[in-house]
Image (cartoon, rainbow, N blue to C red; front, side, top):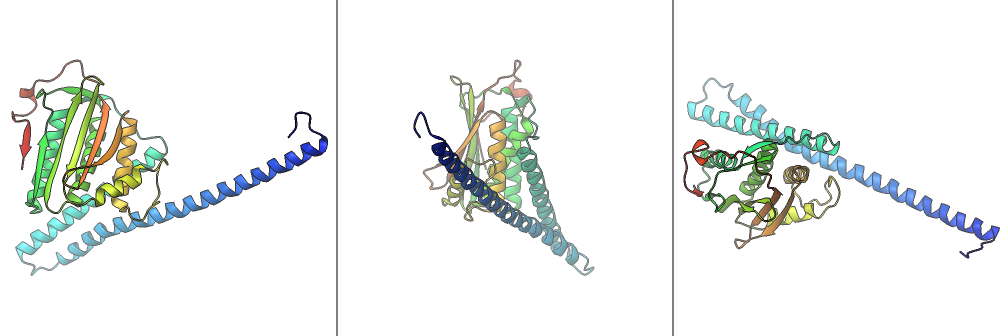
Length: 289
């Protein structure tokens, strides 16, 4: 349009702008419609994830009503019920947390967190669970920082525990045989702590994470069907929590053709660190099971 437009030119320009606005409105309406479809599909997949452990709980509970059931079978069924109950609780808590995160209500607490104690507790939990499930073909390794000092930082203990547990659950889900290793390193220069969770096996988990992490949306509601809904829920929540902690999360390949998740969060050291003798009796930097 010219610098000194005529009335007709202004009308023509206004009509052009109005046409463009209507096009944008249609595009937004289509996008909202597609988003609702994706959200509905995502929730449908999640409901299926919930029904699976629920059906297991109901089914094995019904079988245990048999008064002639042998003791070994009763113990086996009870173990299935406990596992399914734990999975169901985990799913429900994750869904609630994602909802809180989307509404901006997920709270982050700044508190003292003993990093080596945190990782040791997680290691022993998964090691016991590994033996209970007879998954002896998987070696679990915990590698603490090479500096070897126990230290306390300021972060959210429970949320960091939640993220690391989610990532380790995924590692076990996609590893049938091989190695799962996790640990951390300190970057004193940049004041960062970098955690890593690495597993051998195929590249399925890495490819799913890459698809999800490439999304710039707050929640990627089933944009790609190649991403397992349980993995999607856990990674979406983990990505959001780490962002709230002031950090970042990404995925890399490794020499075992598996996946290595890395997390970097601020290294805000507490004023008074706790000595190693007061945290746990282990002196080795590397735990292997």
